Image (cartoon, rainbow, N blue to C red; front, side):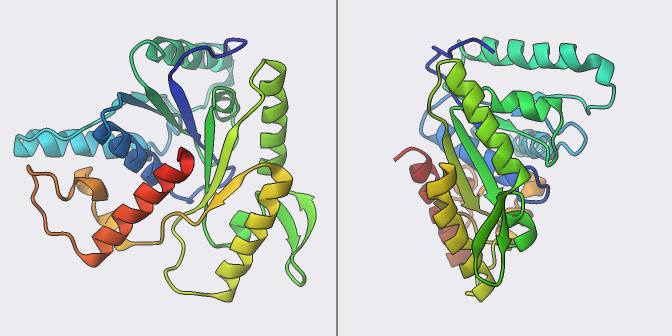
Length: 267
């Protein structure tokens, strides 16, 4: 990483030290929305083993080819699964080279990280201008951010991911980058009101002031997000002239969630 990123390219890292929070869904929808706003976007998939974001983009390409249509599709860079730790220097150098080359060709780079910490996960955070951490309305997910006493909602200790981000902030500040736009967003949350969800959201709002992040309620757990994956389509594509698909109330609500998150990231 350069000592101070002077590029106008904005790097968004989707990260949390917890799998199953829907990082790839957020990454793809943000990429498509930004491209619809005429930004040039590249996505980097560091979860080589699961590769959900890569499959999403590949499904999109296949769908467009099969139907002879054109939909905004980001450039894709996929990294192989991390197995051989002898390749650490080569992988980190490859990531650095890829990002530096993209600085001159795209406006936004979105990096999708795996749901567990490894050396590429750690390296990706060093490039972040904006860090988005999806979290479900689960106390298990909350534990990656903070250890909370459920009886009174009091903080006991920072969670492992919050401690990691704190160290990332210090490293970035030492390299001349004093501000990291850290956003924690609800994702795959129940559409129903529940005391558990309210408790978790209230805790996160309070913790934001302490840990230096902003909280957004984000995406609900909608079937539509899952259904569109196989075709590589996003909710934002539904009203494209080449598709002309009827949008239900669920589609419209999902579309609004995406726009709200994008505006929350950069008002």
